Image 1 (tube, helix red, strand yellow):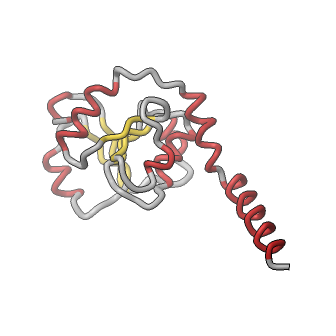
Image 2 (cartoon, rainbow, N blue to C red):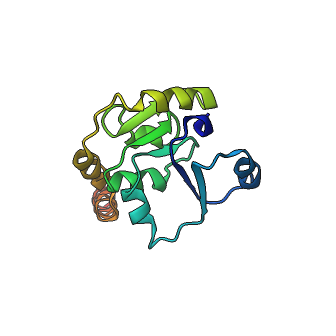
Length: 146
């Protein structure tokens, strides 16, 4: 369907279905392969949104896009439920089907996302914040057992 729309789509990463999908893709769909850590921030900053149809316990890629101020269109499952706020930091798709994601993409333009707010929200998951929370947790646990 994305092929029919003619909208540019960049697919980063590798997977077992790449050859099959690439054979089906139109000229508007570019398969980038593995993107280096050095090139990733520019790729994220240059996108309109990140499409994340998979399920991961946490999933760092959506947060990398959000750190660049970009909304995430994700399946409503796994870690995405912790950081994608429907209409605020992205859009949650209820079903993990092609049709459901196409419907979500079609309505995506109806949203008005604040890129700065998305980037600020992503800071809640920054390494320094995580480290501080771990230190506080350990300190409380140590005090309870002394």
